[in-house]
Image 1 (cartoon, helix red, strand yellow):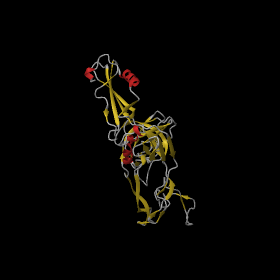
Image 2: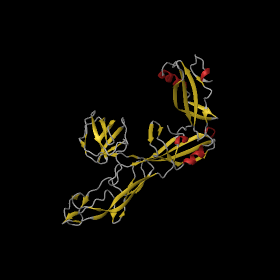
Image 3: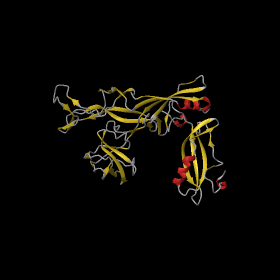
Image 4: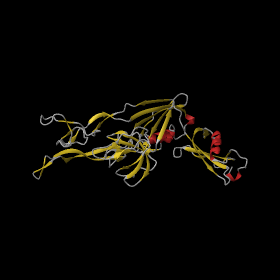
Length: 389
């Protein structure tokens, strides 16, 4: 039935152009459309539509599940509404296994400058700092030995590996399902995702989830058994440097903060003020962007203000980014999960003092030169797997 043919007494009628879409993985969704008449406002139309939209449908022998809907007015009197529901292929979980122990790897960059101690028997044997004592700073490089940086082995943080075991009737699978899984093996998600299992919800930002493949088998009852394998690497949102000491207002108060650039932020956005790599300023909301380097921010953390954040502190856009990624004297580095970060180091002049008009005591010490973030893994639409919200 077309819109023009809908009787004025219609409460719920499927339209002629309902049922568009194909069950394959170039278009992994299916739409159904209905008209409903007699509702003077959207909330009433929505309430009624929710009682009528089927939770699942069967197309070409394949069961699809309700994913989302939209509702739009379709008449001048405001009484006619068109409801469009999207259905997708989904898998019911049988079992989920996970591991948060992570992997080990070599790093060359520490989270701090480091504590320095005199080891040659001269001078102050107590704790030294590079500033003002003629001690060369390595800017966080680990294991500097001449022109080499040896680094150290650590357990890498923010790793979460999991598998989903599921059984699916062969007749319920799209014919291209296994082929689609093989084509995205070794790829990362191209959009944010969430996954809910037994009341536990897991969220993944873009490129944080790597699909490792799917061992599978067909059993004697003509069911297919799959073990979907994933690995997570959390990203860093980056941020910006506070360039002028910032006196924090009390909770609910607003103050102006000066930063290197406001281009990363928008009014109304929540931000997180950090100092020395940990959350110390709490949560703020951007009240307004004043200029290219200044914005008004409101303290919404609900806690007690912690005083002055010194210039060189950071503002991050990610509430999970409580350890800002900084290498050497860089600003906060943005890195999506499975992108590859590498650094180049080179000997640079450090220290020295003017004595009799001459610069003496200069040392050439390995320093981080440039940090590069590369995309090394292709991305794909993970909705075709059928397990994500």
